[in-house]
Image 1 (tube, rainbow, N blue to C red):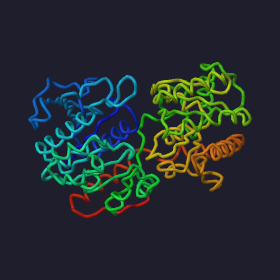
Image 2 (image 1 turned 90 degrees about the vertical axis):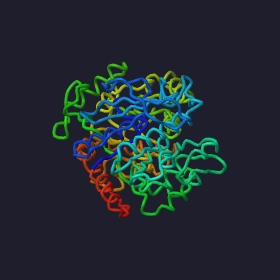
Image 3 (image 1 turned 90 degrees about the horizontal axis):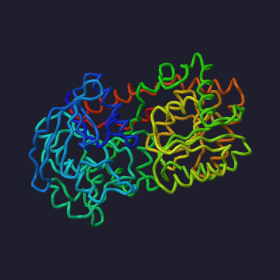
Image 4 (image 1 turned 60 degrees about the vertical axis):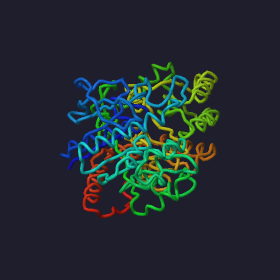
Length: 467
């Protein structure tokens, strides 16, 4: 089976958020399973794929001169890097001030046109699109192959002016959105199957609270909307992690304390017994960073200490820096993202705080559990699918859940988690349950392959609540 997989991010080449890691994890596992998967990626001019010189790609006149390079990544997966006018930028989406590039509509409409042309050339059995950056592809193909659209975050839709509708040959009315052009709404209508990155998120986005205005469009697709949870790649393994001072596992949790001591020593905090709570996150409203900062005063009384690693919105970074300066013995903030540091923090922390207002899937909670760090999360999206509250289901829990993204609910969940953490036997039982669960891409990939096969056989997949 040949799959053409189009995405705007792919780890380790281009990494902004979860899309990069989800794309890489699925693609690598598909390749390992014998699927002939080829990735199409914008050539931002920021990565090397070991390719020969660029070759021309015939494109519509409105796009302009377009070239592509062919190389490989992820142990032999073919990757086609496409460069259209204005593709090359230091950041895929934003300028130095964090604002979206003024011509992102042209950049990703052009990329979608390139994906459409490559689809005609390569004739894949399945065309797999990801998020709004590739969504116009289906409106630029007269006769597309069976297609899958994965929604990694419905909040980003690529909304732009109505002029683009004149260039979309196939069902342009599906892309029309209140007098504008909405790439994501068009692809939701035209794709043969729409995948949300967790089962609970697939249900949430059918309703106004989480549907970002597209709930009715999603509801109209019925069983063609399915939920498949993301996985995490095999580099997240505390038993074989070069970033840690000592390996550990569910069978031998003892050496985890060395990671804890290393983080405390680096910060300059004493090795007291209060739990170390971590946030490894993008600094956005979605992730509830402001909620975490709101409850810092309560950490004084728990007591607990908070380490935040992340980058994103400038106002949240400034506030995190101010809170850390005001509470130097309680809060530590590291701006930016470094994967080695993320591994070390997950290994050294006792608890993970993830107070998301919405969360399509989330990776941090699965990564934390793999490292024996107990998650405290809100009851949304993929967090609902991956974390079981140990107070609600004694003896079966993997973490603690705040029922709503509010300071009051969050403080209660933190108190409950710390209470459990202080009981060594209960703490270890929760840790082991999280560490021994299979968070890999094996099962999600099998579900994707089954979905591909169902589309080739023209049978609608069923929405099943897999975890």
